[in-house]
Length: 200
Image 1 (cartoon, one colour):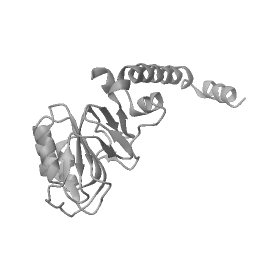
Image 2 (cartoon, rainbow, N blue to C red):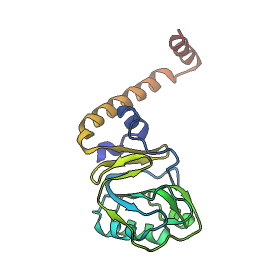
Image 3 (spheres, rainbow, N blue to C red):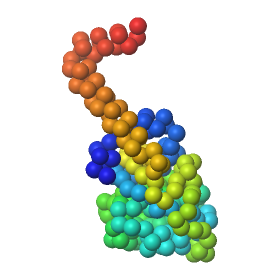
Image 4 (spheres, one colour):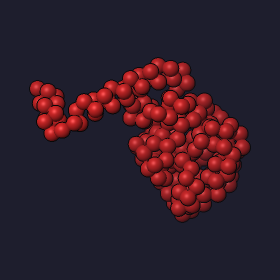
């Protein structure tokens, strides 16, 4: 995980050809928050959030709870109390394709929660859904065990079977970008010469 934590989502996205980026509407509650960990999935009926509690109970420390809330924004998948329980249970973070509430309280936790939006309304308690199975979150297929990386730019899913290949490509891309910055972002003349080369 240490290597993944050193990589930006943009480098990982480039390594994956942009094919497993979640919808850009799913963002962290604060820009400085970053999440890296293995997915534990929760599928909900829109507006129902009971299975979130089951997911927290079943997930392993270091997992990221990835919740398919169907993008529903009128009632909350969780608030600060549930997010606090996830944090105390040792989870690495939460990614919600739906709404959260008590956002000020969640920000105080300094716990990585990513969501599509916020609402004031509580979710229902019907208990519909399942945990641990394949889901779609932010328009991307997610299976428990897939790697999740999220930062201020968004969330990327790395399928388990592609991890080695993607890690190698993302490290190469990030190193190349960093070398280009060192070489080009020196002074005005160097930047203009680089632009001339690019525009030929």
